[in-house]
Image (tube, rainbow, N blue to C red; front, side, top):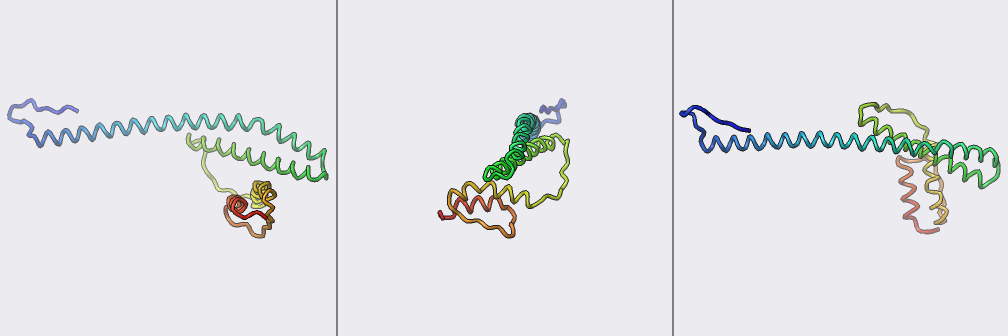
Length: 168
């Protein structure tokens, strides 16, 4: 910022110069902040695009895996514990697909291509996923688990319970 007076009788005092210097400094800071904000937005958009592409690519192999598990479930119907293992694998593939969808949705939100709308969800499915998530640790630690009314955050609760409950 450059400020000058061409008239001889209008010269700036030391205080005028200090105020103008401070003003120029503030203006320069604001311009730098605006440049950084724009750079940050561009970086966020690039990051979002990479996440979206990765989510799409990670989701692609899940379809054939899900189909193979479905086929194995039909072939091995009634054969336990194989059926239970396949059901766990099926739930985890569904969980991975939801995660990939959420990553893609997050990218769409960053680009203003998606709006959030609340939806109803089945608590039983979420409970089944949470129980499947902690089942291996529960068995490993010889815990007994009974569920009557699931509180909010059941997966985290069960995971912590499995981690911090003494063996047996």
